[in-house]
Length: 136
Image (cartoon, rainbow, N blue to C red):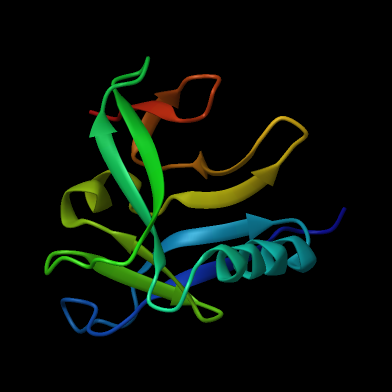
């Protein structure tokens, strides 16, 4: 297995401070083909004008949990990131919890899901992968 190949979602539009693009979400894989499949899968499940929304809310066994949904509504405070023609949207409050996170798509016999594998804002997570505690 060779070195990992990161592919970043780049913020669409102004990056706030004007200091260049903001890389918030990374699709990370040891194979470009797998990253391509993630982007392709997003394209397959989303209609025109839809995007993957990542939201963080209180709950889960570690205090906070990730929520993924397909959405077509963008709020004024949402941040939009794009790669390969597909978009990911994160609201401003959730952004503080997922900044720099690595998002992957896992397909197993019992489920297929988007998940956060690496989150520099998290202290630790539970074994299910959807719940985490925040670094203080």
